[in-house]
Each structure stands twice: as structure tokens, then as C-alpha cells.
Picture: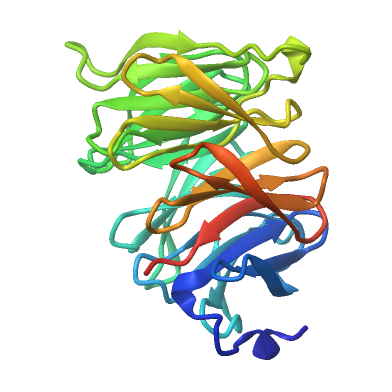
Length: 318
């Protein structure tokens, strides 16, 4: 289906879910009213990281093998322009106002800062080996990068783009997520099999507070590989994608206790809430589908086929 053909009644922007298909080189569009895929469009070679501007107008996609970030109209899905990203962009995070985009460049051990309006590179920040995860602190003091081989979370000042703190975590950290009040940062370590809890209020800066482990009966420990995470806006529940374990863990943010494992598709990777937080969508790379989770009931309610090896997911704002 063409991009133009996807713009239809009933597919309003607030109801659109975008899924990047890493091997299919497409983005699949899902309507959250019907929970059906309504089509797809080409998104460059090896699309992975994906996100939407705060105003809901632009969809950003890391076209990793094209060494660029492609920008699409979130309503019509037309390709608009591309942004410089550094080599092999895998993941990014936008500043809250959408003016800056922070990109992890795995091959060059850099975080690239892009001005989205001027379409220019503002800075290139040397970080650890194989950077991936990115997060911006709610107080806008830090942008955080996780380096997969250095096994650290790097805290970069938003004022001068210099690393101010480094916190050692477990092996192969893939993702970072702040609580909405900014007091805690969670970092998932894929090979280490843990989520590190970092206290942002430490006397000497961010400090490791605890580590969350996982255990599922009948699932080999090496399959428990935490990657994507999402936290409810009330800071009560942390949802963690556990990769080839085919589960999403539900963690009590306050106690750090795992209260439930939700069975989803194969090799669950990333997660995103709908704007009302009633539903959580997971990308399942090896079953080529997404799972819809009812957040209140903490249960999977539907599976939707998408493209080949879904990687990331973004949901249009209201």
C-alpha cells in the first residue's frame, strides 16, 4: 500500500501506532481503535529506532544502513527530508521540546546531537564502546547514554555536552528510562540479565542503588535478556521486555519486586504505551508481530502481524 493510500478516515493521528521493521525495511501502521494493521510504507534500509515529534507532526526513523535519520509526515506518511546522524544510527531520544535529537552511533562510539529545525549536527560526544540506549532526565540536566561494551551509563550535561558521571552496570546495557519525577533511572543489561536502579539523588551524583533480577519457571536464565522498558506516569509499574524469554516483566517501582510475567510474542524487544496508558504495545522480532497488553489487568489481549523483524514502536500523541 502506498503512503497516500494509508491516509484514510478512521486512521486519525491520535490512533496511529508506528512499528519499524528491521529486516523488512518498512514501517507498519496500526490503528488503535480497530487494532488492525492498516498498511506500511518504505522507511530506508534497516529501520530501527523510531519516534514522533512532541507536536505529533513528524515521524523520525533511524535508517541504520543508510547512515541517516529519515523524517516522515506522521499524517500522510510522505517522506519529508533526512537528518545527519553519524554512522549506523541505532537509537535516539528527542528533547522534550523536539528541538534536539540525541543519536547513538554504535560504530564510532559517539552520541550525535542534531538540531531538528536547522537539520545540522550540533555536537559529537565521545562515549563508551558500542553506545545504544538514550534518555533525557525530566529536569533537563542530563542526557544519558548506555555503552554496550563499556557496560556503563554515561551522564552527559545538557549545558556543555560533557560527561559528568559514569555508573557501572551489568553486561551489555541496552536501554535507559527515568521515572517521571526524575529520582530514579533504570538501565537494562541484556547479557547481564538485570535492570540496574540508579538513584539520581546521591550525595556525589547518580549512584547504583539496586539490581533487579528475573526468573521464569521453565525458561533458561540466559534467555532472560532485558531490553526495552516503560514506566507508568504514576511511577508505580515498570514494564521490561525480556527478549528471547518471550515475556514482559512487571516490576513494582517502589519495592523493585517482579510481580508478574506476561507471555507475548517471540523475542520481545521494545515497548510503548498508548497516550492514555490503557495499553502497552510490544514488538516481537522473531514472530513478526506486536502484542497489545491491557495495562490495568497486566494481560496480553491481542497479537497483530506486522512486517519482517519488528524492532521499535512509536505511538502518535493525542
